[in-house]
Length: 233
Image 1 (tube, helix red, strand yellow):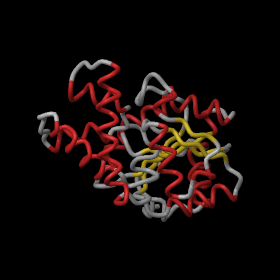
Image 2 (cartoon, one colour):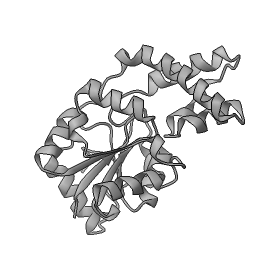
Image 3 (cartoon, helix red, strand yellow):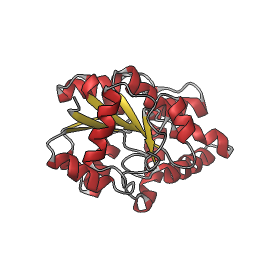
Image 4 (cartoon, rainbow, N blue to C red):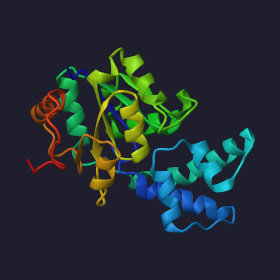
């Protein structure tokens, strides 16, 4: 039985990937590192900040991670006015809240940026539980963050649906025992379904509560496969 929804944040709640890419690119340039666009894709896969820093800069001390992380976040804050919610997500959250479904957030972002984003969009009250990268040792694709979200919601993972937009996030949610729908943009539907997503939509505009429950029921009945994207069935 569907009892709750767990959202990732970047790429699911907010369309933040373009500004993230820009902020990381500008930050790395200040350290004399110019990364090709393809290499920058690593930052979009739901990793924790310290993991991204080590990926690009090698082994770092805790002090360096804190300093570099703060410098990157300062650049990101300059671009925040350009970050918009994913189409339909605010109305979708309102619908879920009205139906008394439990709602959680499970993001690799820092708690400071996460709470600031939710408050700026005026959607913080919708979330019963917020789990961030500060709350777990291992980031996605490790399932710890989704398991912790389920524990804090007091709901079994099998009764929760996750929304993700990254391969590592899908692996994290599925390994935790949840079903997972992908928010697939830029032609990534096939990639995210191959990673284990149960269904894929470009945004939340086509997802009414009735449709969501119907899709969940089909998954519960093990009628596979579901269609790849909304609007095809």
